[in-house]
Length: 396
Image (tube, rainbow, N blue to C red; front, top):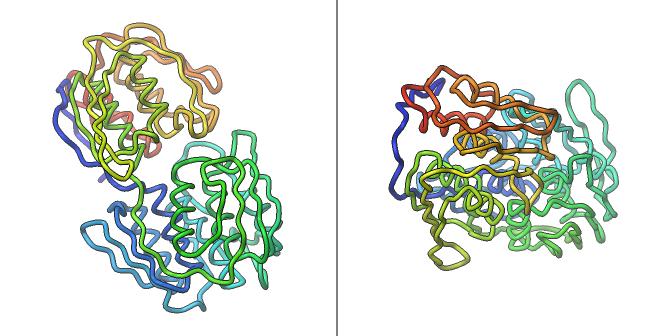
């Protein structure tokens, strides 16, 4: 879809189901390349990125069966292909997650450098450094990463970068290390729930992994991985976005299923603005959340940080919300300091936002007005939709 037309100034109410997490599903799907058995997944969201990765996996010898209910069956049929071509990989950055499992199981991989949303500098040097530490021969030629290794060997890997750890890098190296000979220790590993979900799935496939959810992950390599059945965790970013949608429109919305423990930081900042959030506990750590907007939103100050902090993927949506707050708010993004392209577009709707390096100062306004705007990336799109829902008039 090239555009949305939104008739704003409407209070949102009702119940909404939360999809499985795309950011968890993609590296889990890629991990089938390291497996010798079928992988049965549920809760896989019906998204363009999922279908793009399925197309890529098909070229790498994977048979897939995807149902309308989010059920997905993956099975490697042939292990000869080892090239992930540019025309498929360029569609999304998560395609790089095929590199680790492909190399670990087949001994060679040729993967195009990835594409993805334009949200700032996101190099893959930590991925390559980690694979080299595991004994792979790595070189980059004509836009492709070319990696070879007879068998990877366990090693100590440090994944800290200038803006924290790398989620996709942790996923890539964890998948690769499951088949490495010996013990691998990943220091400064990403702690995000999506990394934990991949690790839990790999365990079901036979991997020996300790320390999930901490900055130190230890993996004892095994000779092979088998099949598994796994349910993808709910999408915490989708859940947070819908909570913000209720708050910015003066609404009352129930969402389920969610993992409340994945939303602690977002919940805290929303409650600082006066939003009321109620939890109804379910089973298997799942629950429903009811979000009710206050009569007037209060300003606040927040910083986007790696998990368990406020996700950078919710920064833009929170900026839209705080543009309606009664006072001055401050947002700093320490994960992607240049992720502020949406600020100017929110300004077209009447928001008053001043950027100073990795920080944006938001002067709340009593109302927004509909206008034509353009999104730079996925989360910026969500922020502009949220602002359009709250604005008076039509936003396109």
